[in-house]
Image (cartoon, rainbow, N blue to C red; front, side, top):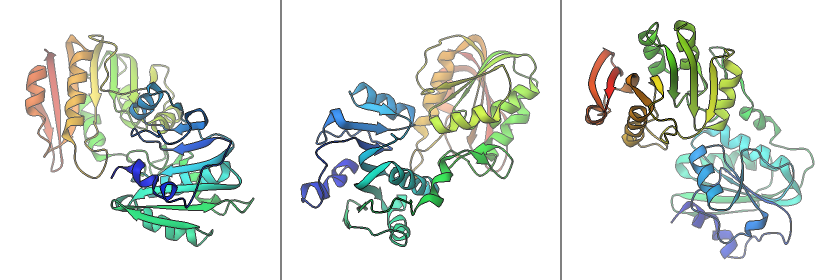
Length: 332
């Protein structure tokens, strides 16, 4: 059973129903579609660019911001606890008095613990379990938001290293160790036009700019809108350019002198090496014939075959107990 099918359970059983008018907002909307909902009243809220792009191209009204006022709210959970709590709190804020808020999530996304926490602050009207997950719902009865303390997690704030990050952003708590190992390797080796694929909240790009005065411009290409917003707060360098997009989609072919990347290797809990391989292929297509790729990866991830397919020379220039730093050149 898909996520959206699980979401539809209380509707199909007649336990809850959509209002006759007003905006229906779906936070962290999915690509599975919402064919049972009136499309003209539906707003899909999504900050992850590939999903945003898919929903928009499918004809859904799609935005990165929660509408100010909604008649009915739906929250799909993510793997980040604080993000989930903040999404629930902000959806409640936007909900009109008497409106219904539905929360859908898998057990692995913490739906049960979120429901227990919500019950301590507000009445939960009902719940249904299916497909290793749960749907629960509540009715807005309080003008004052009982979940207000949860809402701030989605607002950028300083992490333990003093950089602006937010809940749900990769390595929000502090500097990622992989990036920390890549940064000294690229110091003094970059020039011209550079791209950072999967730039996150911008720490690696900042280090690259500070240690490479010959860089003319650095494009931070990041799929998560909130992460890019944090990067804009962290970098104060006129050479930095912020690009919200899918790093796997190459638009500027053969135009970069160098690419740096600490690519993602999972979207859920399971490793998905295909993501890293797609980043490598994109880097090949972006680089000039004389261009260089500097990549950090977990040691157990087997990217070598893809690297050798895409580049004429591949060297592991540094290796630790967890990570390997790869320098690739001569893009094919």
